[in-house]
Length: 162
Figure 1 (cartoon, one colour):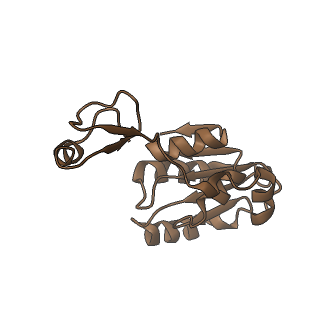
Figure 2 (cartoon, rainbow, N blue to C red):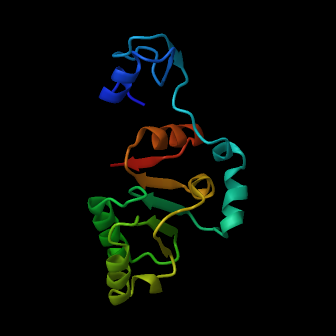
Figure 3 (cartoon, one colour):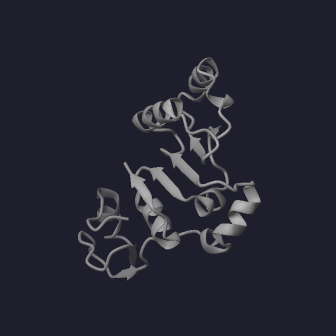
């Protein structure tokens, strides 16, 4: 996923026939390469935005945010503060996936702050159907991982990248 191979790929490239790479000018490999790009899941492009929105019952503008499956504390804190301060209830829907790390403490804090009483806020530990959620979104707020960037680009989604 990087233009410069990591230590493991460099070491293993000495013992394999070919290495699949994401960029044409990838450096650090000692064997022939196959250019694959950053592949995305086929189901990411299998349905229209409208079909995805209908699937999850979204009619308002939709913001999706996440920091990764384990969670990213700075992302979670920033999004939490944004959701808590938001006064524009019912003008859009915002789903945030918190991740596994600290999920229980986050839920307790959200309950104390009455965050889930806001009709436009949806809190999740993990998003199990990312193609549907990302496909339905009008804006995605997330970390800038290689595969996530490839998916956002393929979908043509506006994003705030962290």
